[in-house]
Image (cartoon, rainbow, N blue to C red; front, side, top):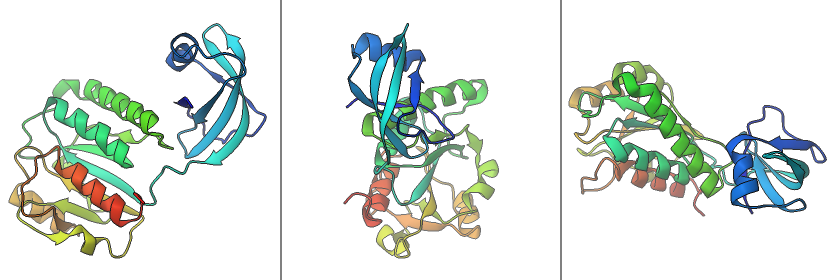
Amino acid sequence: MPRFFQHRDIPAEVGETLRISGQDGVHIRRSLRMNAGEFLVICDGQGHDYRAVIDGFDGDDVLLTVTERSVSVTEPSVRVTLYMGLSKGEKMEWIIQKAVELGVFRIVPVVTSRSIAKPGEKAAKKTERWQKIANEAAGQCGRGILPEVAMPMTFREALPQMTAKPLFVCYEAGGEPFSALLREQPTELGLFVGPEGGISPAEVDALVAGGGKTATLGSRILRCETAPLAALTLIMGLTGNMD
């Protein structure tokens, strides 16, 4: 069944009428060629799903009535914020898309000392594109929220935020296995992964000094676009979110 996101701060009720405008409305009317009487699913981005029937159209706007409301069952029990060392070009786009599919809650691009890519004056434009990729991935895989992609931050700017919650640092020089780190089953955690050049010793020291724990992904050194996806898969599997 087609699924669309419509932000709502107040949950909709059964029997309430809704309107879908903009590109989603055009997509429903012109691309999917849906008709009155057909059903689709709307997610409010806050974890609620609504089964709704199309009543009709107002131009390219779609008019619907909610027939059923339920809590989304696709959101993980653990909220993972991925602090990703800023990587070049399509690598960041790939990481964002796949991280959303795997259940990440939030993504923060971090400019580290070894980041080759620099956001520069195009940071806002890049972030807008990354958010669009995240939104599309969330819709495609049936997420109950739209994970936020934050504006890029320097390592110094991000450090207080990263160390404010349990933090796992993927480190090629070694650390504890995720199975040991996740024995206590946290409901919220941060995951730091470096860019192409890895993490500098000074950055690792700063993260560990703030309470972060180094984590290993095995004896093989993974690429920057592989490591976060492997780590997220382990986290979701070990917390029962891939059963």
